[in-house]
Image (tube, rainbow, N blue to C red; front, side, top):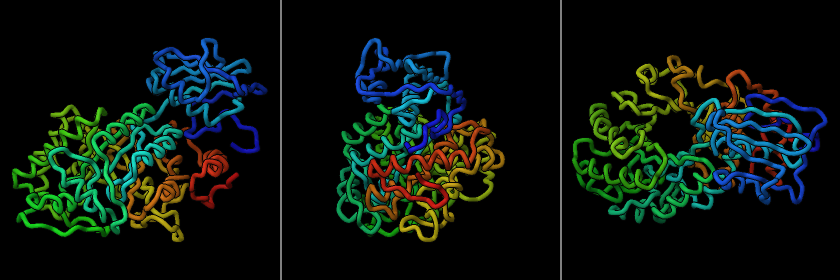
Length: 467
């Protein structure tokens, strides 16, 4: 990763326990082989090395370890990587990939702080192709991100085929959609299923979001019968929010919602469906409550847990509901109340995790409504101290959303993602008391040459002394 000698702890996210052994290294050279039992064959494939029964890199399962935990022992004679489940071994493989090709000796014992470590990509404001999303996943998993939240629908576009509702994608995914009309496209059911399977092969759960009852102008352009008066509405390609709403008092609304959520649930083997629920300024409060009372139970009827942006905490939530906090306020009584009643919380405060915020006033991309988000600011906070009444036991995990109003290319995605995503990833994975900004910025600096060599368009943040 750099000219200096790689140390055993030079990993992002920082492992829970690192015990180096001086003067012991194991070089990965041509012919170095991997041994793995049948249940770890697909994990072994991610090392890109030949397989042999007596391979010097040995992958194994140890059911005494947590499912996502692993133990990595490196000696001069070889490597033993054990995980509590295949996922744990896979995360250990990511550690190996960061340390190689000359592996420093010692033992790493590691496990995640939170089970949900997420990144969100907005396909609605600007569409990205399946291959582009797959490449993004491959970059995310290097930092042990295990959930990809796809924002599939919004005022400016609808990005997933729904059988029986063809105009959603014919119109909502057609030419001229997206912010500034610059981001057309959509996923067919087959493309979406293939993408979900690609992610699952990397132990990433796709979390699909169908935003409602607001953020639905693209729906109502395609199907005017879902408006209040049944009249057509004009397409919108600006970045304004809060002006559209499904109609809580029309049964047609719920027939549409049921059809969409059933399709998405059938296509998604993961446990979650995200129904949005944010920025519903055009939905009267009584209608908002009535709508959620009808819609929140639908995912459970299809075997899924419902996730919603934290505005949904204004109503009584189903037992399995998950609240995603996204604002910049220092407290939120409704979220605290939901946590006190046993609901889990995903923590995504915009001033700490929103990757679409500008780095500084000179950033060519991004927004600034939540302030500027430096790498240090993305790193130097604690999820369990962010919201009064939402302690460690209430937190399911942490997610870093990337909204795409200002994005036009994969290079744009990478510029805003890196190097802040690794900071949020360490917040979500590493032990509560085990993080240190000085150590992190040094470890992060070593990724500069790697990203440059890979053609990754990252932001060379001035707070990092890049190698």
